[in-house]
Length: 422
Image (cartoon, rainbow, N blue to C red; front, top):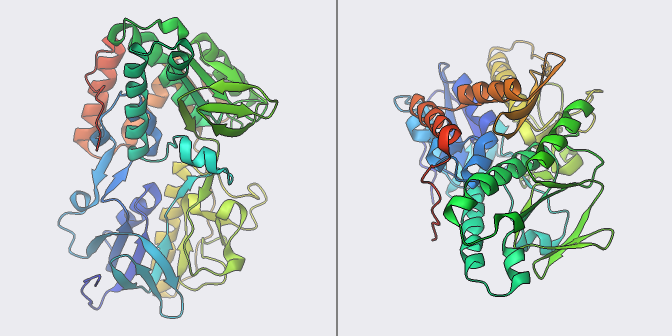
């Protein structure tokens, strides 16, 4: 197979991964004289902060996904190739892919991270991750299929397991999924499944640490736990999951939770790429870079976002937070440095500017920390809505998401609760 990318006099920049960081880097080079090649296993960019809303049938997948080719229509120096990168060949300055070999002068690794199951095969095989739109659709199908089964199940114990949802991991993803499930229990289940006793539906949020949202302040953690419990979520702190087999969660203290729907958001690990020096692989598989995001031991190769770990930053010894704003800021810095390198100019050091963190919990419930100030409740929820609406690509997507949110806020009668199978 051949990559079939025409050669010209332009300097080629190859970007691996079209997430928020990779996409931002491509956009930052749009008005330059580089030939940019984007490689991704999907033909679309997805907006991770709203994936859980697809899982809870609040949004359509198309509302948070946007095709790369549509984004860069009319830019003749942009090339997209659908496929996976198998390895980097530093000697040849090329990447080996499922569709052929692509040579580069500059290479940017922005392939993100995947779910970390910590080596537990039972957990990996039987729980549901939440990293992609596909994962969200799988969870949505599972929830509604299990509710359909529960309506016709005669065995009380099996019916209870079908109506139990366990979310493992108390970070922003876990908190937001738990809140979405609680709202579904309150507003959707009584209307759509009136033969089921909604009071018997259990939603557990299990966290190995002593508080939720450890990346945020103690005040925000306490508020999030309080809000979730008021919504009927059973928050279990200091409880580590050791296994999941026979449709049963097993905790470190020996307790068990029979559940047929288990969402695993307990950790992430950087996606690995063959061909990188072993000395450049750090904590949780992240790629070690210098302060310019250049990969350790390699020339003209950069890593950004969830995949990268900037060495020497005393404030973030295990790497910057794996958040969208980090990836976007690093992408802009690397784009500038590629331009500087081409001109023989000094490179800029990456300096992370924390613009704030936030997590939504439910209707009129959220926590946000911006500019050293903490917010919660309705104001934080409105902040969350505005920030995420602004970040979504495309005017049509922004409009559809806004209309969905308004409609859901008024009556929760969205018609997205479809079980779509292969």
